[in-house]
Length: 82
Image 1 (spheres, rainbow, N blue to C red):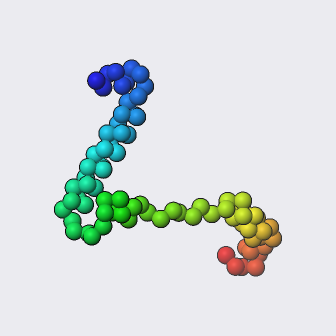
Image 2 (image 1 turned 120 degrees about the vertical axis):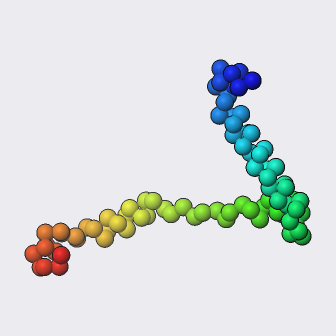
Image 3 (image 1 turned 135 degrees about the vertical axis):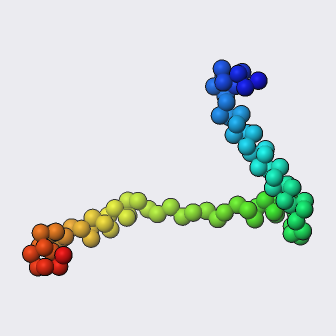
């Protein structure tokens, strides 16, 4: 069976699905044995982490450029700040 997945280039897809099914089974067992008072869907939804806010890279670069625009490391050495 695995040889067929390897030959067709579908091994990673098979493994991904296998892991998803295994993880869902583990969650199901936790939900069944733990009295949470939540439905199965509510329990699964409560495990999803909140979305991570991705910073605006362009804005970060612009701010960094402004901060470094007047920086002269040689000037810092001359004044004894380093």
